[in-house]
Length: 526
Image (cartoon, rainbow, N blue to C red; front, top):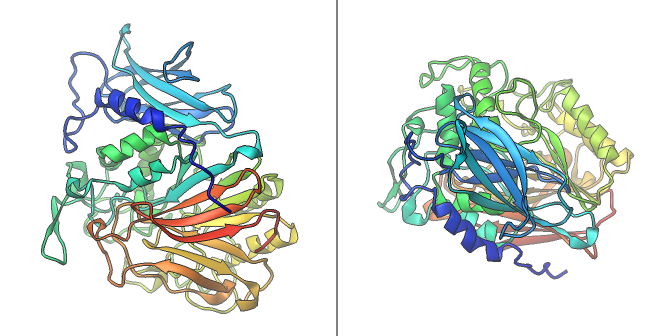
């Protein structure tokens, strides 16, 4: 199948988006937007859209002072006959961030939006508008769907480096004109301070933009907020956010490496030892800094797991493999009702998969299935993901995955594809019962991509329980290879509107295609 032609539906927008954004963005990449109290409210951190459906989308902004958020939408970038949406009052309670859902939009259309920030004491005083765009999900399968995914950003002390163009992978992803970006977690490294410099193997120096909040591990709410603000100092990311809506999930580094509920930290870098306290602060900042339909800034309730329906061709099932998991352990127990998903989330996933009528069902997992991810954070021989290296019958967290795979087979649920990041290399695994110790499932594919901007690591070992075969991998032979040395990756999924074939392309940070796999629609396994 030839790739779907790029329609260039955003190409005419890029110039105007950059021009309007330049009115409010920092004059230098290293300078944070000013927080002057005179003048009009400013939106120097850009705009984002997220969790877009066929008739709605969430729009996000951050102000530099108290302000009323106002959003206008239009079918044209000239904003002729705009619709106006009154948003929330932005204040210190949400770190001056706000999100509003714009509803009643036409399906399969390019939506232009602009955000105005009004002085709460004088609504006539508004800051310079900041513009963005997104495309609603189509009601017609003939339109097809294209999206990109990756994860792992600002990790291992490798931050925004102007010498190499900052987070330039976002420019390559934006050029593909995707309908949305699926971020598979580790959006920040709350546990990873960003130093001003790091030495590279060739004797040169990696130079980071730094901030006060990123000078230590995040413990306070402001430090977690600062970790999210740090990424928005990057020009590439802000431009991308204004052009491509997101679907965001989280993993461990939004809080701390390999964390699990109930953990008590022994690391001397932390004065707060209760990881549940850290997780609550991290979750609050996470909800403030991303437009997520199931989380509201400041609300105590909400969840990360959700289904995003992208028309008749695609449903995206976003998992939360962090909030409900049991403690990391040798993971060799023969019964494990809690597992990595928790019983309630597992039943939710089975129920939603069985209800889905989409041709393709992408399971967005924040951790891989058959790749062994050890947990040595406390010096113990524990495991962090699902696999534990024993190629025999399912044990520990594998038991939940076995239950899910059996359910998919016996309910004859078609078109499941697993996408993830986490392990800081890119690979494609095919899972086959004939190679497995557990055989009551249909064959399926799992694709791994990332990091976006973090240290790259050698390929993980495989666990044979579900019969994985690594069909493709690109990874360094050394550990913690810097973004300056390459090995930064993202993936692309392109679903053809005519044939409904799903094509996965694993790409390097400049967009070069490394591996391609075409999957056929309507099959339980392949």
